[in-house]
Length: 297
Image (tube, rainbow, N blue to C red; front, side):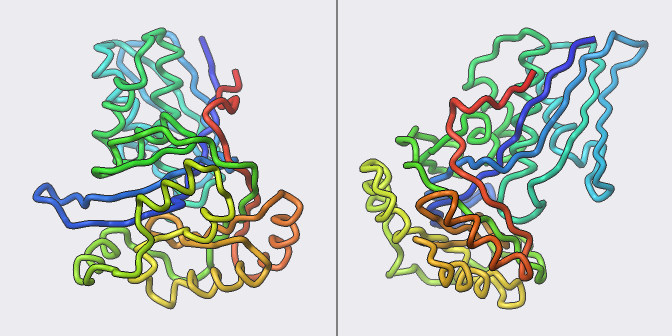
């Protein structure tokens, strides 16, 4: 029996613009994604081969599915298929801390952690490109969750270009207690909008990232989904509350409903957290770079 533990980081979208809907149903996007030090933890055990192949998934959160409806389960199946491993017996223990359906990529990051862990346990020595090829079949964010750090992404999110590491800073991530958001409904609502002539351009945002200019980046944070986010989610009000704490900038992440704010250091973020705790589920974190020790054992 072999065992490994992997940290699966949340992601935020520092910039997210959505283009036209493609013939395959996906939308073209332009985004800058950043992993942060808010983690799920995935413990993976490689058990002796039994009479039948087995994938067992356990999670203490009863709301999390433990079958093929979970991306961990599906990522394991896809890994074994790609690696041409015909006999397997693995067990997953998933500890959830990243809020679900909040635009933070928790499910995608769990799937990425699955692929990385199984590559180690089964000694397949897959390249990052091969692992990303497995991941993109399951979700557009998974290749980024495999690579991590700071990334420019286009296409449906699968065309990635490495960006300079984000400057030292801290984030407050807050998930409002209002009604949740359907990602599918949010994309449909975007299809009815005219072009946003006041949007920050992707090129300008990339210049701020390339210059490692935290102030400029914070001022130019952008998310097109904010234009179609229903008021009852509470995301817009929460963003204003974060800005009132002295944040350098604040935006929604992904299709919501979570909102993140940028602070110059961890002390300022912790002070802001105290002011928000009655209104939202609040987390303080920092940029999680590619060289972070994600694999614990």
